[in-house]
Image 1: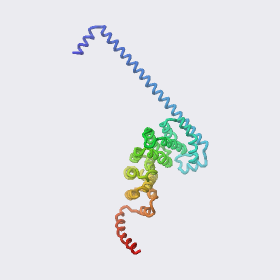
Image 2: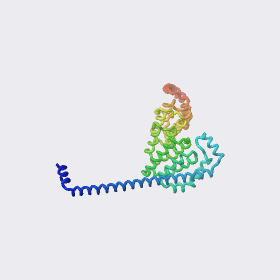
Image 3: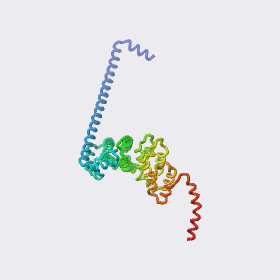
Image 4: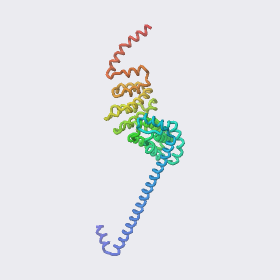
Length: 343
């Protein structure tokens, strides 16, 4: 009834139809103007973002060129050849020593931070330009820049959570995708950046790094990094269960053969070696349970800080003979006690 009455009212008078048409036309025009303004604003924002991205890229390239030219000016061709040969031509070298690289970074640090003041931009520059360079010294600059970012974070604070996530995400991508990654780069990122992040932010970061070993698509270098990251803190006993669980998963829970790769095995041995300083029994038990999955070299790394007797015992250990050894020890024990009493 309401619609019929409205239609009759609208159809009965031409002037009313004109009035309604005028109002509708007015609001349509206003809507079109609003849409045009929003569209223009959106275009302006996109243009501004493109301009900013272009400017940021230009800044990155300028700073990167400055770093490269500085390193080249201090290059040592003879040392470069020996360094490149040592790394089996996986990456190139300018021929600088570590102290020289640190010195050059300090001389350029102020200029880098001034040119790239935003923390997220610094992380992006470090991981997308420096760490992906073919030259080891430029990778070292990227690591040093990330170390500075981690140092600026407050211990147990909540500041810079986006920076923490960006560093973890970017480092993970570099480890998985960069064809110029070497064990030296991996170990420096793990011990000097990721480990320090854990010291600053605790279990939340530790869990994220530990979970890297559970990813099906994890690369060889990411698996090594998930172990090496805990080397400096394993002896304190805070992450025992987590370390043993991820070591077990690497050895038994993967469908690929990466667990048998030399650098993964040495990463496992390294972190188990440090963990043995806090919980020797747990590490010995772990090694016996996974004895056949550990390479000889990995095993030697793991037992390096144990006493001579235990090292010899583990090197000669044969899975399945544990019970026989225990029974033998029980038989020998009384004889030992008799000898002691006689003496």
